[in-house]
Each structure stands twice: as C-alpha cells, then as structure tokens.
Amino acid sequence: MKEFLTLLKENPDLRFIIDILGKNGFQAYVAGGAVRDILLKRKPDDIDILTNASIKELISLFGGQKLKTMGKTFPICTINGIEVSSGRAKSDPANFPESDLAQRDFTINSMAWDPISQKIIDPFNGKKDLEDAIIRFTKDPEKRILEDPVRMIRACRFAALIRGSFSLSSLELIMEGKEKIDKYVAKERILCEIMKAMALKRPSLFFKALKKTGLLSKIFPSLDRCHGLDGGPHHGETVFEHCMLVGDALPENLPILRLAGFLHDAGKFDAAKKTDGKLTFANHENHTGAVIQDLTKLRFPLKDIAYITSLINTHMRPLTDQTTPKATRRLLFMLDKSGLDYKDFMRMRIADKKGNLAKRPYTISQIRFRLKKLFTEMAGQPSGFSINNLEINGNDIIQILGLSPGPCVGKIKQQLFEIVLDNPLKNNVNDLKKICLSLKIKK
Image (cartoon, rainbow, N blue to C red; front, side, top):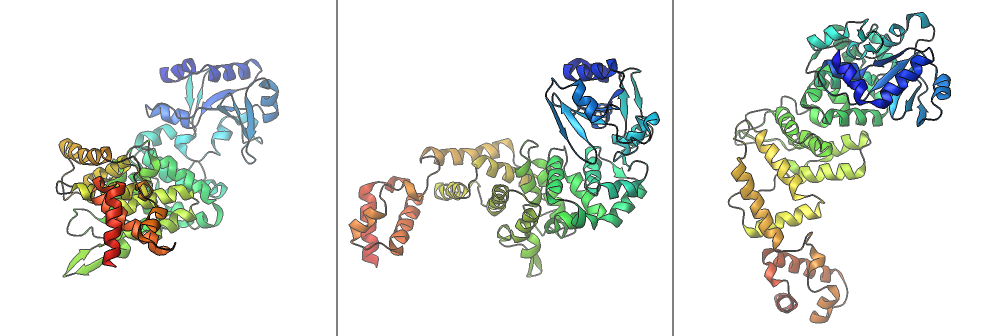
C-alpha cells in the first residue's frame, strides 16, 4: 500500500533502522498501532518496529544512535525516538513474526507490514475486525487479560477509537474480570488510559464502553451512579447523557478541561430532591466530594483535581443579558480566586448549553455579547484583581480607626473589597478612608 511507502519516505529514522536490520540479516516490520492507524486512514501517532533481533543485538547494531532500553516482561528499546520491539515468542523463532503477533492485545493491533514484500501480515483477521468495527482479544482472550488486566480498559478505549463494539467472548470476559482492575492494575496506568481517551474524537464512547463492561463503577463510581438519572424538567436527557454531550463538546487539546466536562454534573446524584413533585438539583455544583474521591484514588495530580473542582464549582455562575457590571466583576473575582481563566469558564458554559437537548446552543452573537461583558469589566481593573489590590492595607485601617491588630481588621478589609467590587471607582485612598470611618460609626 502506498501509505506505508509514504510512511517510510517521511520518516528517515524508520527507514534507517529497517535498512540496518535487513543488511545484518534480521527481519523488521512496521507493527501494531501504526498498521491499524494507516488502515483507518489516520496518521499514526506512534511508529513501532518489530524485529527478531535481540535487545543485545540491537544495542550492538545501534550503539552510536540515541538508544534507550526499557521493560522486563516485553523488553523494548527506542532508537532515535522510534520504538523497536524484540520478538516476544523466543520459543518459536521459525514462526516469526506470527509468534509475536499472537501475544498482542487485540486483533486490530496484531498486524504487521513487511517492507520487503510490501504486504500486511494478518494472522488473526485484524483487518476484517477493523472493517467490522469489532474489538476482539487476540487468540486466547482470558490469557490476554491475565497477562495485563489494564487491557480491559484499553479495549474500551479502542472501541471508542474505531466507534465499534466488542466480540461476545471479549465482552463476557471483561464483565467477568472487572474485579481484577482493583487488585492488579496500578492507578497511574488507569489514569494514562483516561487521558489518552480524552484525545479521541468522541471520548463519550469510551465512558459508554466502560459502562457496558461494568468497568465504569470501578473507575468513576461518581459518574456511573448518574446513568439513568433523570435530568429534571430543564433537560431533555439524563444526567449521564448530558455529561457525555458536554465532554464531547470541549476541545481535544485541553484534556483536563474535557474531563471536567464529563464530570461536571456528577454531584446531581447527591443533590437530587423532589420539590412539589419536580426533580431539582439545587447547589449540585458544590457536591464535589465523590468526584474528588475518584480523582484522588486514580492518582490525579493535586493541581488537576483543584482545577476540575473549581470548574465544577463555577459552571453554574450566571452570565446573561441581565448580568450587571457588578455581578460580572464578582464573577471575574470568583474565577481569579479559583485559579480559572475566563476562557475555560466560557468554554464550559458553551458546552454545557450545547449538551442540553431541551435548549438551543448559544449563537455566535450570544457568545460575543457575553465576552464583551467580561472584556469591559476586565479593562476597568488590573488583571487578577484581588483584596490585595486595595489602595489601603491593614496597617492603614489600624491607623485610620485606631484599632489594635486582630481579626476585625481583616473583616473590615473584606468589606472594603466588597464595596470596591461593586464600584471600582471607590478604590482610592480618600474614599476608602471615608468608608472606614462610616463603618466605625455603624459599629
């Protein structure tokens, strides 16, 4: 296929490695994900070479190149940034590369391209499964899972990648083996699979596959419990469906923001109440405990947990035609205090509206109008305006009011800040002194 020849042409290091291996009597194939991606008409994210040369032989042949070895169970090395795998099935060298491909995870990843014959080696009908959009474990499904249980999560990610489904045997074994996730899989590896899924066109298919296999309850129980939960009178979809739509609507290049979109309404399960026969979710944005617990268990960095939590806390803050300049300033202050950029707030708001099937998405003019409100208020105050930007400080307050240092000084300073938020023009020494004195009189 010409796509493979183009791959060689565009990657001189790939061609160099294959040439050196061939000249020294070794077989070399482009294998795994690169073959799958090319058949899907996608540019390969990673390019792997499969060879029957041992790691020691690779080190000897490419000692002068940028070479790094890794892995114990399946040793590999990278040569000039390209992953080179030494055949796994040493007991059957006569049947190489089929013997190696037999030990790979899924049939769609168990193909290789021979640069000599320029043909695809496909002993397990991976190309047919790719055409039929089927995820099937290679050869012995139970053994593939026992070798590495994280493959059950990878199966869900690849099902989302090809927008496909599972073979019956693969689905049954994942459902039976889901408990292995808790026992045998490092949380960091699960986190890695989640973040890779965020780069997909529709990560919602990943979460839906996790739900279908029973794995979602093991990974994100906070989200799993929202499946089937009525979205209430203001939505035309369930809470789970809404979260899926919102996450998909957020940018692929902002994975943590996107993940926040998938989790933003998970607190509705805890907030759900029936009021006058209607389902309500008052203050659901403040019910973040379950999401934080899930993210912590998955070993997400503290900064990412704080960011996701802040996005959930602020996603209900109104910004409408009726929002006053005062309310807009308070919104900007809240975002700054939460460590959020107005762009991420707007992205979440736009996606949240788009994911509500009972309402129309924002129009371009509506988005521009809201941005104009933010820009107008941002232009009138310093970037990141906070209580420390007041024109008087705690010592000034003590001198003006004749107070002793203590908690009351901080309370007065907070009152001044609230007043300045409402009217930025009062942030000058004379006005703030007058306000301080008036506060003393009220006391």
